[in-house]
Image 1 (cartoon, rainbow, N blue to C red):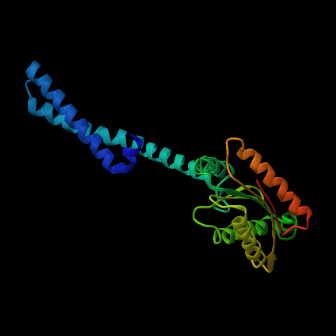
Image 2 (image 1 turned 180 degrees about the horizontal axis):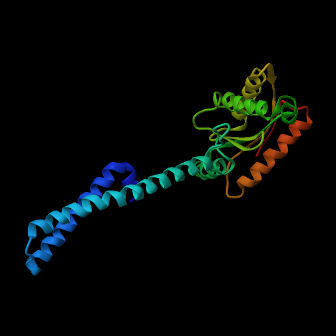
Image 3 (image 1 turned 90 degrees about the vertical axis):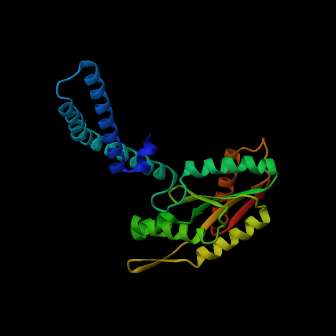
Length: 245
């Protein structure tokens, strides 16, 4: 019903409800006049038309408006649950849900997948130096830079703070490493202009490439990618450490 109201719009819905109310009122009045033999049928019919024509819009308009408002709020909430408000990337739960679905398909087709856990290096220093607004500009720039390199079939999400996940369907380790290197080069060449400063940054990446099976869970893959990410941090940052399962 709500979808029908949404497609018709407020005005059309109110007109339809009003017309239906008038028809019902007239039909009921004619029926009563037939059985009761009312003395002034024309006046009764005119009243049957006038009252719902006046009352129905007054009642229906605010109710339809409320339904439209609820529908709009629900859509906004779905968008907020799916997309990160700062970067426009998939949220943590949204990208995990997407990965789960594609992993099942990859398992059936026996195709490799690759997961990249990405963390911006020394991001706290950026926030301390340029403030959180400067850090936000870096995050937005990073999202744009990465999206320009990824394929349409790839998935990219922000899982919290300066931590991100990239999921590459049908991608073995060699191809994933090549993409990871392109990411490093693009990020190194990215300069974020903020107020009077030019902010440069880098990223560390943990990469896991596997052939999905019932024995390999997404949780295990993400945990391993996270461990490799911190190994990349310990090895000097701005690099990728990978595992081929």
